[in-house]
Image (cartoon, rainbow, N blue to C red; front, side, top):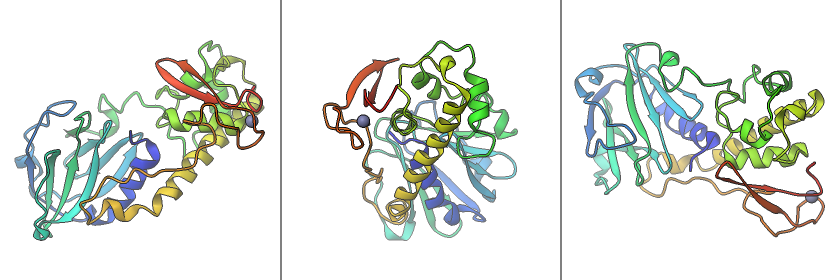
Length: 272
Ligand SMILES: [Zn+2]
C-alpha cells in the first residue's frame, strides 16, 4: 500500500509535468473506485493546473476554480505518458487525465480503493481533509505537539501514531520503524511517554519518512513515461516484517504482536 513517502515521490515525479498545463479531457473507463468518479470532463476542460501538492496521502491538483483530489488507495499508481506513444490502456487503467501537450496522467488501480474527486471550494475544508492532523515533515509537528496530543491517552503509542487526527501519513511500516529508532515499545500507553522521549519519537518519524522519500527519489523514472509496474520502493527495514530475525542493533529476535488489526514488529531488548 502506498504510504506518505510513496505519495510524495509520486507527487515529485508528476508535478513538473502537470504544473502550468491545461486540462484537455478526462476519460473514465471505470468510475467505480472507492467513491464513484464524478462526471467532470466539462468542469475540468480548459482549466490550468496551478500546483500539485500533497496533504497526508491525498494529491491535490489546484486548478484555480477548484481542486482535483487524488488518492492511491491500496494499489493505485499514477504515470505520465505521451498519448502519441500509443500505450494501450490496460485492464486496471481506470482514469486518464489528458493534457494540452499530448501527455496523459493515467491512474491505475487494480483494487479500486483509490479516489478521483473534485471540490470547488477550499480543498482544506473538504470532508476528507478537514479533520487531518499536522504534516509530520513540517515544523508544526514536533515533540512538544506530540507530547501535548498524547496526554491522558491510554491507547498504545503505535495506534496513536497511526491516528490521522494526531499526525497524518504515519502508516504501519513507518510507525513500526520510527518506534524502533526511538527505542519505544509499540504497546506502551501514549500518555505515559515523557516529553524527552516524545521529542525523540517526533524526530524519528521525520527521519524515517525523510529517508524513505530519499530512497524513492531514485525510482522517480518509474512514474514518468514508463508502462511498467508502479514501483513502490523496497527498503531495508529495522523491524517491519522481520519477525524471528535478529535485531540489526542487538541481535535479539524481532517479535510481532497484533494491535488494532495491524501487525507490530519490535525488538524486545531495544524498545521499552
Ligand atoms: Zn535490538
